[in-house]
Length: 272
Image (cartoon, rainbow, N blue to C red; front, side, top):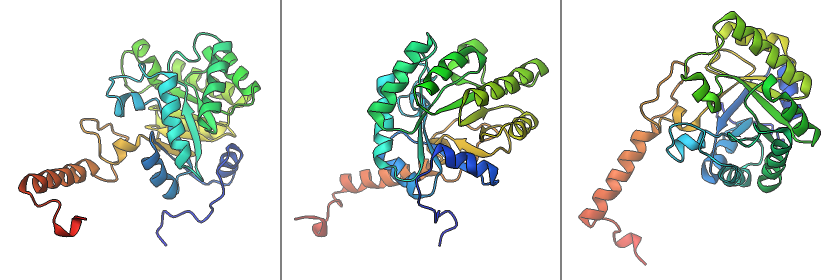
């Protein structure tokens, strides 16, 4: 049996993720935005599939995550859910869908859950949006937090550099992480922060901490197109490429083009 095949085919739930942390079992998470990719990912044993607002970048070609809409996130998440049997599916709430007030945040979270069938939503931020998070949780919707580098706030930060290197910001991140846990979040993503700070958060929280560019944590997440080598020109220190699908796909398409132009495709065995 391949090393990556998971024998436990039970549906992953938020409760099981917390159990995994207690048992010291690492959590594997990747982004997906469509049916075909999500089907492959689910079959390969992922614990969590994140329908990330990074779809704005890798699917729509935008420079930031800000332009993607609730309608577009619902389209992507619905496609992913249709393909997924085992993994927990988490959908990002896009920029502008929860920052205005708690009422609007709950309304959009309910819509996302009803129209996609996903298992949970993810929001960026801590104390600033804690009342909205509490309201969404009160509506019966599981919430995953996101601290550190929060791409929806890129215009505020002005850079994608490592966050929380200074003590004041590190202290606030730890305080925010505690707030998210106390509010009832089932997990928190920590993006691009010092590894020592991530380790401290992991040790203090009873809920899972999922890292991306944050060193060892209870689990890890990457953008699938990045780790599969489908994107070019993006090579942060934390990114490990597990394949070079960009080259594989270019070669395959190039050979198809050549065969069509040479009249070699279709051949007699490929005709009716």
